[in-house]
Amino acid sequence: MSDIAIDALDKQFGQTQVLHQVSLAIADGEFVAVLGPSGCGKTTLLRCLAGFERLDGGRIAIGGETVSGPGRHLPPEKRGIGVVFQNYALWPHMSVAQNVAYGLKIAGLPKPDRDRRVAHVLDLVELGPLAKRRPADLSGGQRQRVALARCLAMESRVVLLDEPLANLDVHLRGTLEEEFARFHARSGATMFYITHDQAEALALADRVAVMDRGRILQFAPPQALFRQPASEAVAGFIGEGRVLDGEHLHPTGAGLARASVLGHPARLRCAPDERPRHRARISIHPGDLDLVPEGTDNAITAHVTRASFRGAYLRAEVMAGPAGDVPLSLNIAAPASLGQGQRISLALRDGWVIPDTAATS
Ligand SMILES: Nc1ncnc2c1ncn2[C@@H]1O[C@H](COP(=O)(O)OP(=O)(O)OP(=O)(O)O)[C@@H](O)[C@H]1O
Figure 1: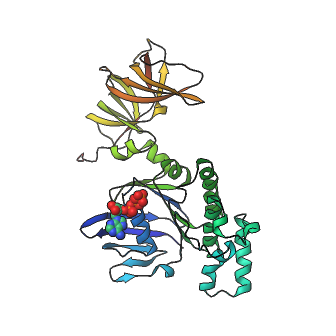
Figure 2 (figure 1 turned 90 degrees about the vertical axis):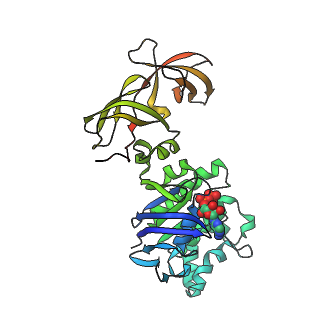
Figure 3 (figure 1 turned 180 degrees about the vertical axis):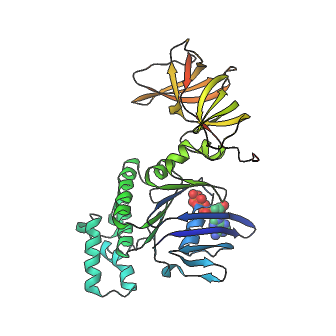
């Protein structure tokens, strides 16, 4: 088993606390992405997990065995972990096959077994014909696959990936995202994937840990982060989210509620234990707003500040609400045309009442 239990992890560099009470319970074989802005502590968390850093507090267990904790620090090579770094950390003087075989050689696997396993994993990542090439003669994507082949060859049950797609072009990123998904399906390994790119995190992971300033804000499946953000910070961070004021919130049962948003009644989703309150904060996304004919009942009025052509749809930035001072974005299916300054009417189709964590029960 290679489940990972991170419990109340603290880490500081000098006087600076970089990780605060980080706890994550990751299931065996799960694909977890850690998403957060630059400097929030993602790489430090990965390095703690890999054993490159010692903890200042808390505990990490892999497959039930404590690898870091009070009085214990298992060295990186004893953790059964494969790491794919941003630069892939390939040996420049070794061929593709030698790079993949290196760990097996150190582990003492006899040469015939080694050769067999290397040939097999190079086939899996479709690099068999390039086995004799040096890393310098490979594309970024091919180097990436060598790094993955190395994890496959070592049969790592846990694979840590540190921004593996950074520095690659958009087309290659798409192809390699599929590569990771295939690698995960094939190996069944527990994957821990660091990124600051939310599209990547949401597309790949079973669950995403959203991190900010050394703390985990929410750890949930991509859909839940998008549809039920736990806080304003997550709501504003995921999927071009906007947070609006709601008034006179009335839960109506079954996770639904009514409230006044931008001066008009709205039907919203909420937590099942949500209570009536005067004020609430509402999470919405561009897809929750529809253009409706002028004069539609309860429509929100807005004026267009910018409209841009995006191929399949038109993207509109508008100012909405009774005072025309609330910025919103929406996507309108093509063909459509909107001009700057044009007055439009909108309907709010969906929204999520952000739970009031300060509420007393
Ligand atoms: N060895 C170190 N000594 C001192 N400070 C460090 C050290 N390593 C990281 N830090 C600091 O810890 C904080 C978190 O860094 P970390 O690299 O974990 O962030 P990150 O989220 O991975 O950022 P990025 O996405 O830019 O790589 C930063 O403020 C960084 O400057």
